[in-house]
Image (tube, rainbow, N blue to C red; front, side):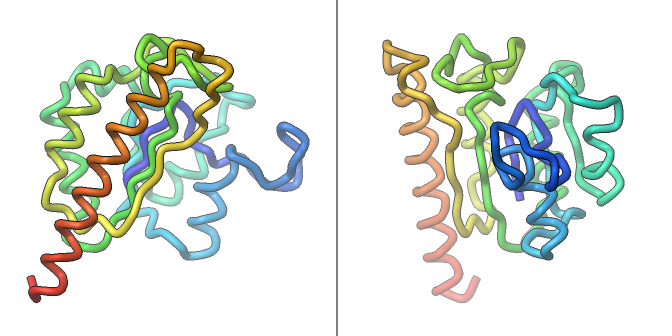
Length: 180
């Protein structure tokens, strides 16, 4: 799984967050615990959000996820991040999820949990171009809140990212049907 987000989304279930025990902050933990994704083939990009405890992200690290915090992204650059994504996910099937708070709020202000200092839309477009050819089986762009962005910029950027995902998934399907 490729997971772009300001937050690792590995909170433990059982303690209510936003009024629900299972929520947008628990999905990666649950997906790993339930065997839906292979943690060793999961890369999380753009992490920088506030933490509820000092060890909040340890579950992902201990499970074997490759975590690229925003400071590392900034240090190594987008081309190295793309290479790392490709290395981690390999040739197997990949789900790509983008939480818009992984992008900088100047690009995507329409979210309920904005975190400053994130991935720019230009960098995200480079990532989308750079992962072309992976075996993408699906994807999503989530946590869009139109009331937080009357300009519509978040929805526009999300639509472009979804279009790229759809194109990657369609190309991957054609390759699978052709036997390679």
